[in-house]
Length: 68
Image 1: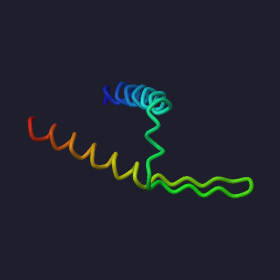
Image 2: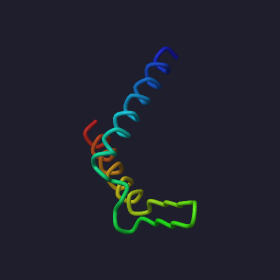
Image 3: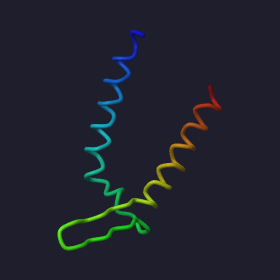
Image 4: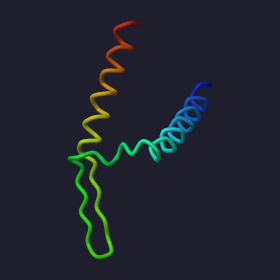
């Protein structure tokens, strides 16, 4: 139980770093992402970004599990 606060803090730091890097990488604007702009509202659904992140994370977790 003592590692839970450290894990949550580490997860927060990782999310902040990823959010900061996404400003420069422009990962969320791939072809296939849905953007609907109306008068005063914008709807954004990153389908291709989600698929790409899912594939990359699946490969990373597969490799981590394979070599453990």
